[in-house]
Image (cartoon, rainbow, N blue to C red):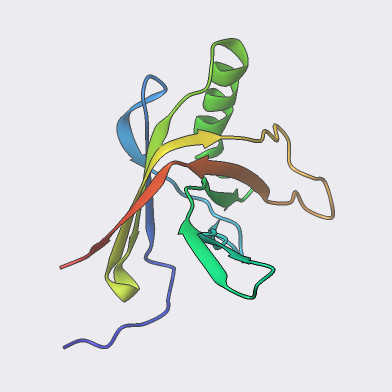
Amino acid sequence: MAKLTITSANANLVLFAPPIVVVPVRLEGFASDTMMNIPSAQIVETRMGVDGIKSAGKVNNLKPFSIELQADSPSIKYFNQITAYQQTLDALYFTLTVELPAIKKKAVFTNCTLNTEKMLPDMQKVLEAITYDFDCEAISMFTLG
């Protein structure tokens, strides 16, 4: 069995966002240090009663994540188009598929929305990367062949 690695250089992020992106497209042009950030999400809420007995229960929460693109990324156009759609019409729900061959994992993010806009990068010595913030309803995990 081949040893797993920790590279993200061979990761694939594929966006499907009809009516803006009607054929799934592979995103490209990620920032130098960050491609995608997925913070942990709370899945159980716990309480301690005054009598010292703990209670816990499952909670449903949005699944936040962010994608960071270089200022010259050709994929920025898709997020600008989604932003324009949402400003003019309504929220646009889309799907993002993430494949991580290095660890043989695939994740499908469903009912995602773009929640922040940044039409221009910060201007430093060079143009800075742009971070896009999203959340989704569910993330389904799969194992790659």
